[in-house]
Length: 298
Picture 1 (tube, rainbow, N blue to C red):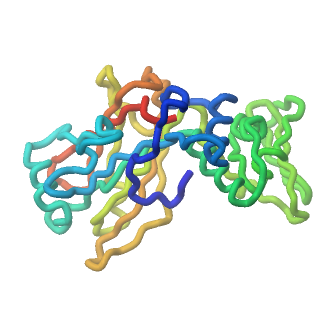
Picture 2 (cartoon, rainbow, N blue to C red; picture 1 turned 30 degrees about the horizontal axis):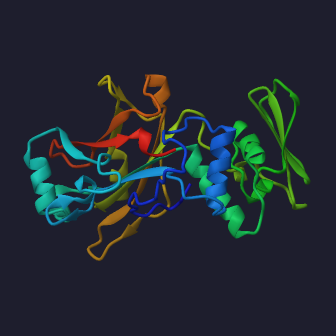
Picture 3 (cartoon, one colour; picture 1 turned 90 degrees about the vertical axis):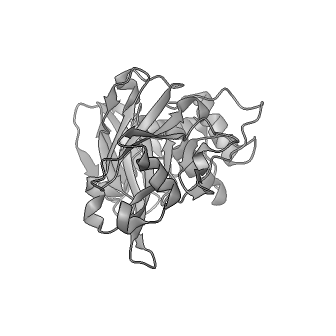
């Protein structure tokens, strides 16, 4: 995953040679190979994330403009008066009056994590194979430099224990009845918390970039949900923050909030259109919906 996230636009070329787009809840061998090949520039780039850019230009959201991905990112009022949008569009940076504003929303899954790690392997002149990457993902680990990009992840005999054992030469992680050994290239101890975890199967990550917050404590006041085609609201299963929060010239804070959803458990399909529902810390009564097409990225 690209951390910290900056405000991105959906500009990756999706050419006819690319496989059909649809979010991949669990990486498979074919997708893993395509993502790795794209990261090594052996094939055309693949769209592994989708961003709605909510910056305002000329009284309009960039996300509502024409071009690639225009169908995703359409902003509307989910609850509140029509002035919720008109006030935002007319004075997007009037934070003292409106409170903070969402600046962008980015959805991604396992394919984007793999893309990032494969690019890191390529930049380090290392080799990453689809088989090695999938071994790491299958036990909940990222294929990164700590395990030689999945090459040092070895599945051993089943074990019912769920403990973590640390030695000077290797780290053994017993997970879901399987024993997984991550061989270390260093003679120093490998701490369990240093093992980078992958996004669990079936989860989507939302990176919500915020601008204009008055106090970091107000981050917890943000409320986010996902609404599928059946109209039911899905709450995130986990939330956190990226360590990218900074103050602007006026002392207002901006940074990234992170949420994880389990759409498949709510009956949302990998190519459905969903609304991301966002309420800020403001007491204005304004709640917004941003549309995303899960069929526009892997």
